[in-house]
Length: 146
Image (cartoon, rainbow, N blue to C red; front, side):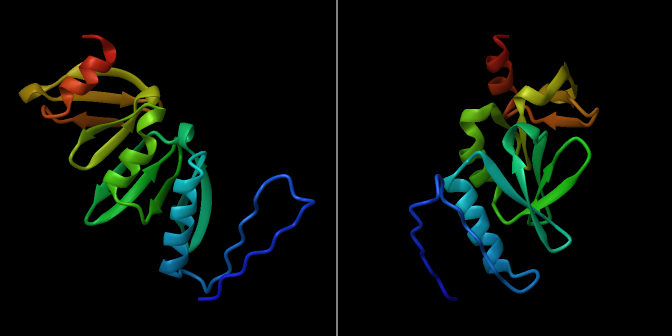
């Protein structure tokens, strides 16, 4: 891997360009690390391309079969970040752990309803339903002041 730093006094902000062969996993980790350093955006991957995603556009993140997916209102992206890394990165932005396999954007929750076994059913902005396990339900209720 070749790394180059160029300083340009005419620039007002840093610009990062990553060149790689298609589907390079190292490039995905680099972009995710850079996104973590500048948390305004996350890198979401689909069809071998990286897409910048704003945290407020995310409805939830879910881990399935060892892979982590980011869900927006109409699209699904994959990220090389683990769920605990996303939870830590997005904690100050209204994201909460809902279950062992999901982190939700509390600002995107339209409604919640008690469910069997002490769980909560969260209905998201786009109509998707996420279940909060009884382990994490008290944190969500506390956030609401219930």
